[in-house]
Length: 473
Image 1 (tube, helix red, strand yellow):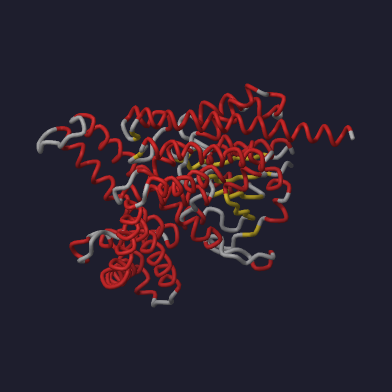
Image 2 (cartoon, rainbow, N blue to C red; image 1 turned 90 degrees about the vertical axis):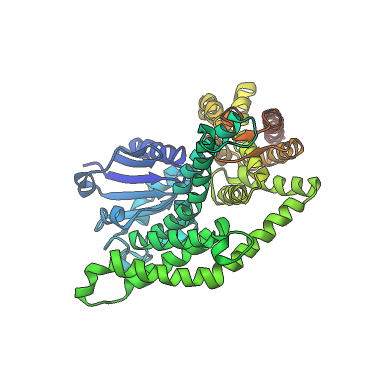
């Protein structure tokens, strides 16, 4: 009987990584004659859902995650041999994961623990780490920001950048957009906490984060912003996780998850936010925003160069997401310049690499050439992940070229004052009105792509020439 594998893939955005990882695992398993079924949890919902029978018959389970699973989802795999990996690991080396599945898989004794006698007694939920919980919050936050940003852009376009009149359709859209941005903070906190401790942590974190951004209640100059949301989400999540581990009489257990824990956690976080967290982080955010707004053009260029280099360095990894979250958080504070840099540099790597395969196919592997066309098309809509296989095959050449190109594009973007107010769709951002000015965006993008293509071809040509010289000598 062939080995049977089931798995789950998800990522913060639920767009590219989720499906690329699933395909990579399926291809590697089928090469070895294994049976495999992967459930994808993407932006359009769950596809190829695993049935209880699928899981029962499986020899191994692979959880390739970028934003974690709830307790109920993990409970499906109790008693199975499970391998938890970050989704980026699958994209980099799927063959290694399939080859070493028997050695690395650990038996689930319950929804949250693994067998000690397997040589790994780690808590699988905890193995996500803080970053995994943070990305879970980001994945739920993005749709609110996107919807809100587009509503604001439409409203602004309708009044030509002027002030809306109460009672008009433009006024409605403007306020809907504002609501979307207001909701992004409690949603971020709530789903960070949810990732850590499930449903009992959701309401306290959302309430606490909303409170942390009410400057009138706190008596501060501004709200705690996304930093406050992260702090509240993590504090509530781990507090609730600890609270759930306490032993209570059976008569109280039925009330714990929907009454006692949410009420106690809300009380605790409200006190902490009102007296400590809110004022402290609000002051930090106010100072950061004032500092960024006071920077000279040269200083803003330096900051945007750093952001651009971070975006293209690991293309969807933790460094990329850190830059993305910082820039998006500054939009909520009224500074959209840095998110403009993200908008530009996010598109450059896959488009440039795809174009380079057309111009100099002799410098690329057959599979890279075959993927070149799709890398260009997908990359134009702001999805960076198609560039990852190129970087894995030749990291120093590809990533080096990308970082230089991103730096140049960031400089051009700052000089044009390119801003973006919400997550978007790459080259469509100026068209739908969330990235401005259009000429600056497209100029910076064109310059960045040109530099990246030129450098990739140059670096690979030099590498090929040196390799040929070494062989001949």
